[in-house]
Image 1: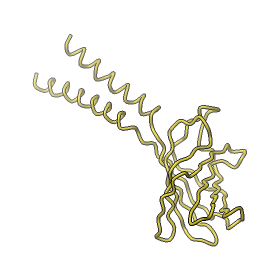
Image 2: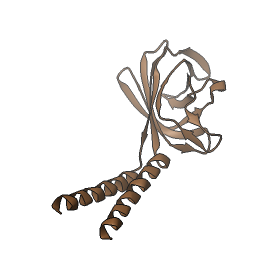
Image 3: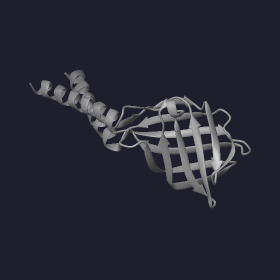
Length: 174
């Protein structure tokens, strides 16, 4: 009976951890491309795995030419495929307002709330707008979106694995 209770507890921990992993994660984005007349750049930011609105504000990091700037208050707007897909990233840097537009495959599902999709998304089209004026096209590139679980999810998964380890050790000792 005691063994059955331990097995049930371990299964519940693992089941809870997987459900929490699926629902409670965030998505970390890394965008890399080349813009004209600038050079290669990277934009990184994180979003919750589920959104109630396709327009959000987050902190992003913009890196170009060895210079990296943290940009609080960055606006990210996700689009469906009919509106060119992927998303726009708007931010201010050095007194200038920038809008980087990334076109490609849609990176979310649902009609609200929206679930962001992890994976790799090629940038099919895109451009850079500075202070409302066209600055250049994006030449290729990709978006890498990686799901990361919340700390509590990792703790639950750890408890579940520890429970299974205890059961395994007792079985070996018996």
